[in-house]
Amino acid sequence: DTAVSQTPKYLVTQMGNDKSIKCEQNLGHDTMYWYKQDSKKFLKIMFSYNNKELIINETVPNRFSPKSPDKAHLNLHINSLELGDSAVYFCASSQGRGYTFGSGTRLTVV
Amino acid sequence: GENVEQHPSTLSVQEGDSAVIKCTYSDSASNYFPWYKQELGKGPQLIIDIRSNVGEKKDQRIAVTLNKTAKHFSLHITETQPEDSAVYFCAATKKTSYDKVIFGPGTSLSVIP
Image (tube, rainbow over all chains, first blue to last red; front, side, top):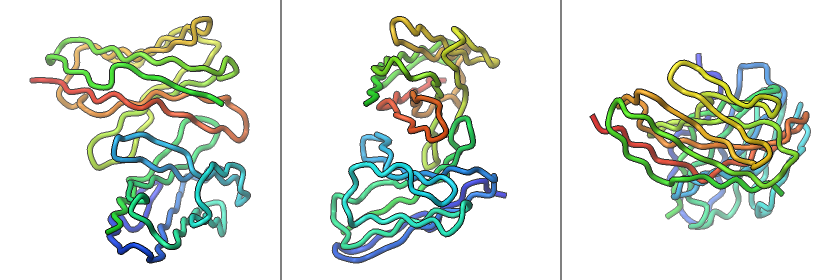
């Protein structure tokens, strides 16, 4: 009964392709996030949605587009993938306290 | 914006010893400081948090301290066990409705049996 689930867990793709990562939470939280973790383990926020509304949009290339069809889902679509996009992407949700993270999606661009 | 520094970046301790990780933050308006533990292949997990109106908080073998004046906060793990081996992240945020949590760079803790 996973609280925050992401799919896929692993994603290997070629440069220039378009890919999506899906996230769902069953905690009833209002706020969801996408974080990027680079090879040095540094966690950097990308986007945040509150009740389907975009509230945080960090300096992320336009190739990254989040979509929240409802407050339990936050998907991330990436166009024209580049080598530098290789990282682990974490979805998280929160409701007034700390985050609950998903288990991550390891994206490798070759 | 907020900036969080964390030291040390790596830490090795013998099983049973204590481990201390220290963080500093830059934004004096930050008022909520969570700590996360990330095991290999998993997402970060909240292990303890502290709000700015409290100086210390304990939960079994882990404790956090906060010095708002100096903008320092620390994680203390006593009687370390091999399963404590993980990457630990401190974080800081202004706890509003739309909080943006800023993470420190992480500390890789190894507990040697």
